[in-house]
Length: 468
Image (cartoon, rainbow, N blue to C red; front, side, top):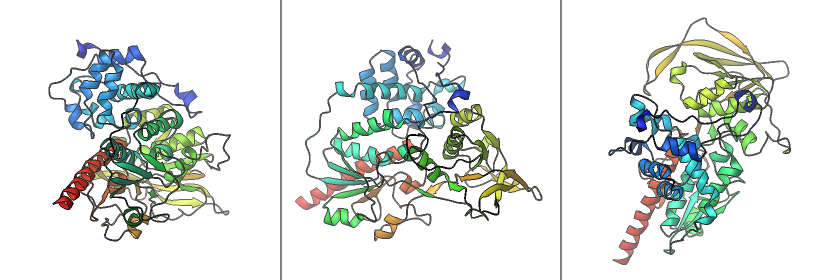
């Protein structure tokens, strides 16, 4: 019967209305919709969805609990493996992970696992005061966590549950890392969702100190030696933007997506009650095809600009989530595929007036498996614009690398760590974007959880050696 029920659609803001505001696009399921969608799950004996989840949430278990009407049980099942269900339900690429492996998706529509996780996560937030947290007895060990993004929050949560005294050091003035500075309000509400997910971590006894730049305010060595922490986890993310290195990138009106989104999100530039300068211009060209590019171009649209995506491959190769591309098109975003900038054009005042581009065609697959773009000779043309936003990926800030002796990094500045987050420095662990470069929230969470287990094993082994 379950496979004969069509996938329950999710209510959303009308595209023409939402393109003018920063309210959340997707409204999510109500109780009846969630129960009906949950009833579609086949509760497979071998759950392929669980295997594809980076944190291995018991997906059939929590969905069955929803179908039974036991949301407290559903929340408890998710909480055993995931720290941020309301966040992950909104921003994770379910189509390439859990939902992409759902058996129902072979001949039809997969179960809406992400939307159901969001529903349970939001319910848990609303009923947080009804479930008092039982804090474990402290074991006398202290761990410092650098960064309050998804990797840091996940690592801190697991360590706190295991009895460690944990303190997170955050460089910015608000907690949440990429969740607050990178992902727009219309995809992930900050006060209603992120702040309350952070409160759940604090209820575990985790202390958080903001405005501490590790590598400047304190170093990793300071944390281990002067501050007396037994181990350190580095989850500082990847906030250093990349540019193309083409002529004109230093003109007024050229931004990194990182700066543009940080002003809009963390500094509330979209809200007229905040005096935060942001320049969206008349026509914006966003270079890139990932989720950050979609976030930037949709933000610019909401700030009143005519917005265009320029991407050097075809739509089939777009790395952004299918849902985000769909929403962008609904909102009137123009997509210029197989197009690559070669020069940013400026006027006599030093401001952007356009972008010179070339047409591309796809050649043989590269090392990523995607077909490599090749320039069509003599295809140069111009796109009129007054703002260019580069959304080409990011790498870790070099501060920690430059101030931590013996910490191996790659040529791109990423910290070298094994699958458990173990680095070249004893007692120092790392995970998330600081190791991989810009990736997804759920992968960062998975790395944080693995590192927490490795830290626990490391400190227990150290104790055993001391007691011999």
